[in-house]
Length: 265
Image 1 (tube, rainbow, N blue to C red):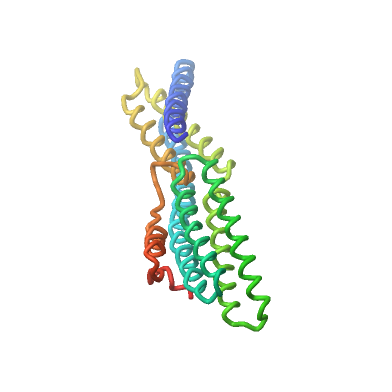
Image 2 (cartoon, rainbow, N blue to C red; image 1 turned 60 degrees about the vertical axis):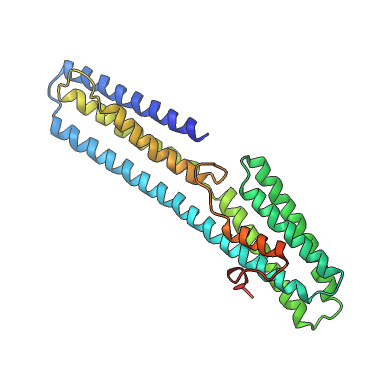
């Protein structure tokens, strides 16, 4: 998908410059009243707007990447806290809860490392199923003693785990750059490239500049990078899952959760 966007953007930019060049050459052949200074100012203003939109859109996608990194750490903290507080449960619920939390971490890692959106959604669905099982166990034990502070602490940790899971899904799958922003961005890039080609023809250049390919490549690289950041399932930029892998290793060893993963208790 990203390669399609990259190649398509190069084609669009080159065609826009070509269209602007041909229009400018036609205008210049009919009349030489068109002033280079005025055209240059207009082209510069449009390119400045295109640059602003690129920076604005890149900022959105970059912020989302940072949010995803923060949420991985927060989720590891929440799971680690629930893992530690599961020791308060009586047997056999304690063993069942810890087994479910181990599987939960494995499912979260599988979903984060999936290469296909369907696999991601399948992993998210499995995580939700485990959450319901953990919650049912917690509620069952809480009803045995409605005034138990221990049960309240475990339920609080599960609540945090569920909330962060919801945030990760929302940020990763639903908080993509709106289509209208993409539309305005491409419109400004096309207009800016047409203005560049038009200015080249107005100056009396006999042929297109060899720098056209460099200009097309530059804009295409930035737009492709924005698209990569906007699609978490892309293989180009992956959010590090080390907090979850460290937690998984600690669970497998049967020890306590890592210090960082237990900060939420």
